[in-house]
Length: 316
Image (cartoon, rainbow, N blue to C red; front, side):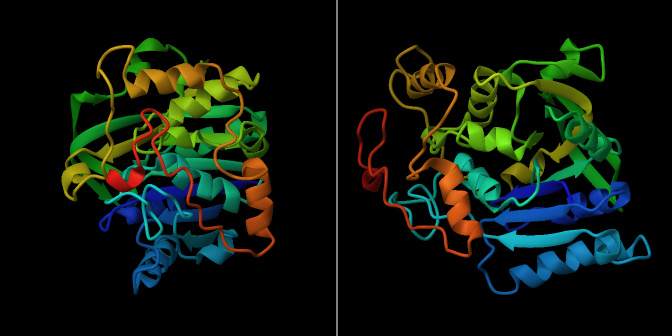
């Protein structure tokens, strides 16, 4: 088994069956599905996820084990921004920390990521496997659509909108095109695990803000890695369901919209980076070794302030 597919969700109703059903339709080789779920510790949540995973493969007439596919369901690692051990007053958006959880738990040579509320289009897994075989970072495409109806892992109805259209699709003529790090979007990508460990994972300085995905892409580019945009690695996301539950908080700071805001300050750091130490002693490689040795993720209490303006997280 060479591939882990990590599904990231922070929603009660994440429509995970859409992803499971579409994977079951496409899978030809064993893969490990790793669900990082904000609600993983809730009673019966694990049974619900496992049932939907098993049911997706039973539709093909065989169980998941017959295809060599396995499922792991885990909560995000402790964070100062969200969850049980947060320092903030409420849960804030912390996608870098959540995705780094998956990197720490990955036991395969490559890992792919897909967001919730998504269905994988028919060539998605083929495109991912090509990236695995070519040993490059594959940056996938997306469309956020309205009135999305999915049946047995395939979209049977939806309405495209200009607001939800991936502008990168207009800028390429080939299915696979070399791209820069800014073209790595978190909703759909695949990378060699070693490349992600080499750059320290996603930049957790973006937790509470966003921009963790292109932050990773730029670091990978700065480290000399090869990235390609693949329009066949396409997911459709439900636009309406993004707002069915209260979103996690994410805010810019400073003189917003100018060079003096937090997002521009983060970008200046990112553009100079090819490694993110984050807040782990020894970096993410050491943290992964610690966890895969059977230990729990450590409970962290740093940073306790916002790096941009030194505001205490306990005040946020």
